[in-house]
Length: 277
Figure 1 (tube, rainbow, N blue to C red):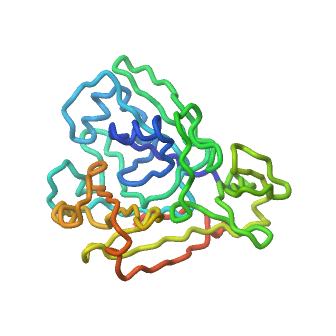
Figure 2 (figure 1 turned 90 degrees about the horizontal axis):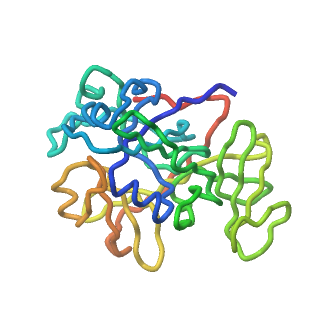
Figure 3 (figure 1 turned 45 degrees about the vertical axis):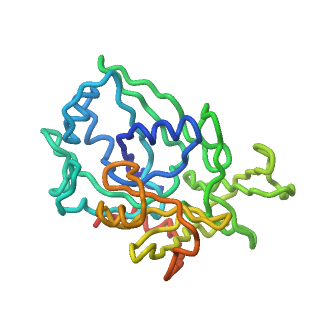
């Protein structure tokens, strides 16, 4: 199988905190090719490429293989109250292409790195898949079936992490599935050949007060939603908070969701890496 593209994402402070404190397993928004920003060795250099004039003691990034079924688009050229990338490149001399990546689960083996002002880089954690999450995180949050890859295997559906020619399946159940090993209470894992699986993603979209959104998780009469627009006025109408530049999320009552639709996309291994738009 061909080597996959390695991406890098600069982490806003709330996202860094969510990884450490609650095991955040979702990623999206602005990303670059890791090798294209390798020369940005200090927090000041890295932030300058994002249009931020600051020199903090450290900056946090995640590096991860291009997730299966993630889609990529060019940044918006609309005027926004944050630094954007209307030409599709970071600022400064790096000229690294930057894309907006759709929300998905971190790919297996994703790494959380801290870059210090003296140029030292230290890996703080590693993502070990849906069942185990981030190594050393204070909590593990169950994955959402609405975000990231799933797999059908022997007539059943599981959370799925594709690793080369294998698939790491995760089952969340009180029972003990055959051939699965227990990872934590109610969580089981098994590795099976990729050739035996159908890998896919299921995405749900809706309107919230006429604003397009993606449903990230639903339960208890409410839904976590990601707005499919970066317009601050739309976010204000919905009551969504800004997670990072251009990314707005909200928790809303299910009664506010209209025109709910679902689509299932299958990953075809022979198709290779997804392209960008």
